[in-house]
Length: 230
Image (cartoon, rainbow, N blue to C red; front, side):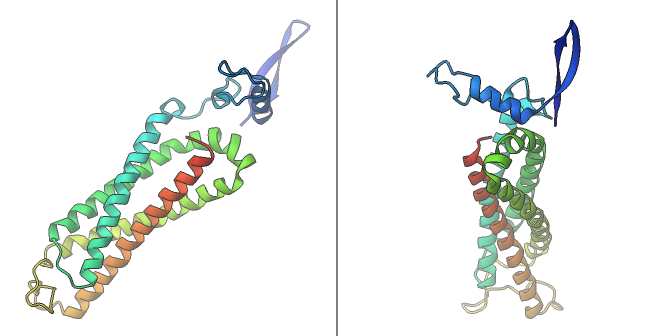
């Protein structure tokens, strides 16, 4: 994304293209810091006047906080939801209301995380990736792309888990009738035990899949941030 500047030739200002990468190197090689005075020390070059401003750049810090907090809530809710599904698969009693609570919390936190990440992406693409990761840590840039692609799989899983959790929470899965039978048969008489088991296993796959996607993305995001901070 080239910017433009002018230089004087016989009193006339003639525009010429600026290579942001080259000019960034010049800033890093010539600037000195007030603290140690060492030549070539890395200053706040990401906000140099030579680098054009990008969408919501001044809001970057706030968006990073929102994105991080949403991801923390998402991980907690998705893991709890997966644990409930495992309990159902093992025919253990669960509180039906928690199926709805964690289903909605997971989906809303997922949407919040995705929205904050989308607003941050222009800043990441120019300030973090173009000026640093692509040149010094391409593996981190590729890991970030993998993380984003994986996130597109987790969202449908979270939606599907919520859709299944709604009817499951109304058919009385929390009180076993005997020590060997955990699923209560207060669902309508036409629903067989085998079909209910299929629904529960589907719910388990979706919730565990959502939790694995969320945990993987958090680890990948931390690795990328460790290479170059937000």
